View 1: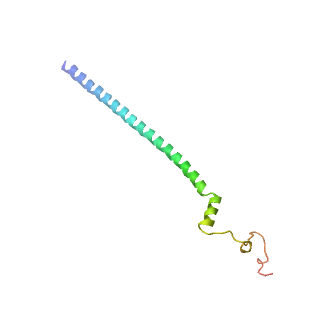
View 2: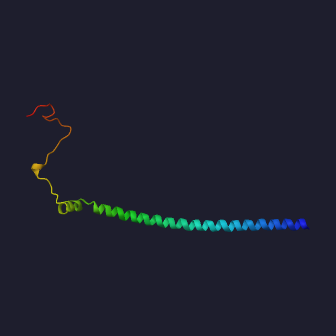
View 3: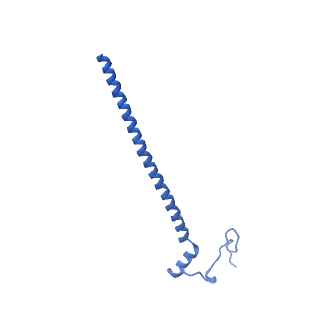
Length: 101
């Protein structure tokens, strides 16, 4: 009889330990799921911000805007025709042979 009661007590402890471990693991799984959802939302917000930054960069790098800033703020101007020189690569010139025209 004592042996039977001891066995029942041991089984009861094992069942309770198993139930507690199930509750603990389910609680941990729910916490991890909530954390996963929060990280997914954070990733979505980062993607939206990345898109906005790319749009801003393309707006700021527009050639017309750069030219406007260069002329107004930096007082830059296009060179005149007589200030321009063109260099052609891959064609022979009279200067290649060492003689001058």
